[in-house]
Length: 92
Image (cartoon, rainbow, N blue to C red; front, side):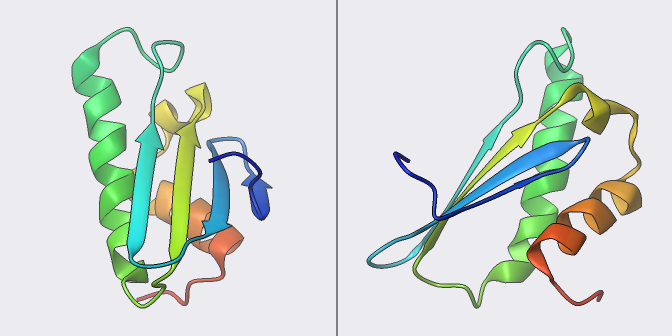
């Protein structure tokens, strides 16, 4: 993703959105600075994918979600609220 069309930053994640020709793509980046344990990094990845699964209607966009160390301390609901606030997804 060269130049992101939109970029949103919170204490837990940075979200970059770019328009795409077809389909929808989600990339989740959780580095070792977030946690040295792979199980914790995978847990954050699974949570972000579950939250972003609700955005199925947004065809033609590419999302890159970069987790920050603050994401490790958040519960699923807190992380969901932060991402939804940035993406303006109505609560389900």
